[in-house]
Length: 184
Image (cartoon, rainbow, N blue to C red; front, side, top):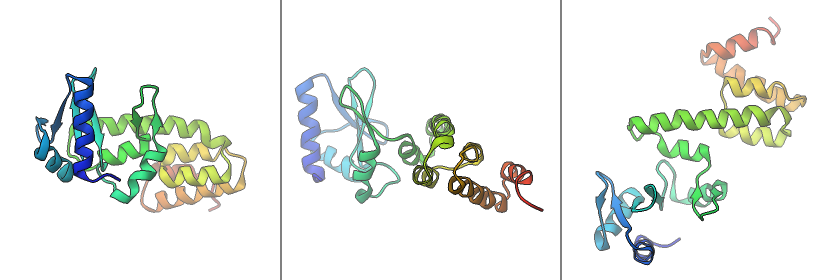
């Protein structure tokens, strides 16, 4: 991975090559270049490119991730036709945790609804291996209810096990689901 200085050179070169673009940093999205850009990259691990159709946040190190996790985050991302790599929704949720921004809280709720809909569609047909990976990354009562539709006893028990954990922690939805499925 390039160091902050090399990374800043690539960003500044890209902005010059495409013209009309500027680099900004937090807090306040203030313009930066040169040594200030290197400092911004080291301090926050990201910068914003302004001057495109919409602002583009570029992460050297996503919020809430360690640097050694960045390659895995990139592998899970989705490459768009325009060359933009978008983080996996679950990774994007993690990067928005603990920012203290209302917008990020709304984004998290929206992203969770996307993940929930995807999981509810995929879990009833998932192999035990797929279900284990999926539920290892994201799990809540609605998703687990969909996993219970899977004919695999392994997936069924995985869902039941997680429902038991949630119920033990006091989740009323998990408790209600278990009431009709567990022996007294």
